[in-house]
Length: 217
Image 1 (cartoon, helix red, strand yellow):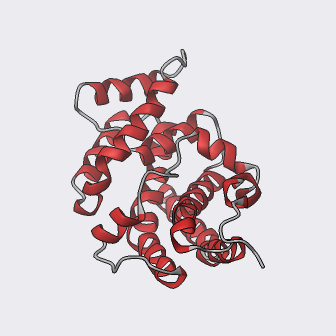
Image 2 (tube, one colour):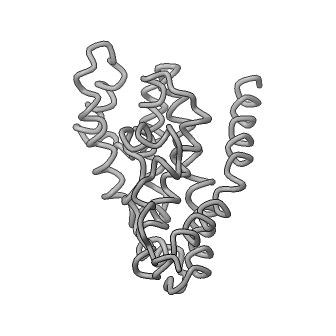
């Protein structure tokens, strides 16, 4: 019999492959959002078993991850690559105006601003320093998704892999946080992860196609 939550879950590298350490370094959302906060914001019933956990995470994907977080990362990456600070600040302010993100704003800013501080010593990154100055002066908020996208560009990391890494790491974080409470086995957790992530590559490809069409137009 498999013991509940014998946490190979804690070995995220085994789950996510070589991308995981880099995703964690870049400040992914692992631990940023809680199931309780997501369920409350999306007005979902409390999570009490693997089925309700899957329903909650699919709602998170459909209403936050895919329409808001991944496009924000993609857009921030593009603004950084074109040195568009004004446009990045405008996007930062636009996210602040999204009601669905308000309960997560403080945590997002904490993670994002922490990562920006890590980037401060980079001598040749005036773009980062200007964005950090905008955050310090209250003109911008430093959302973690935007800082994640900027960081991908600064280190010349593949956008496609970065988007998938973020989505995988966030999904795994939710499952890990619920595993003990729900007494899920390792196999249940891995099966849930695979099910929730099955359509993510297609979603990322569509986002990148939209970007390509916008640039071509």
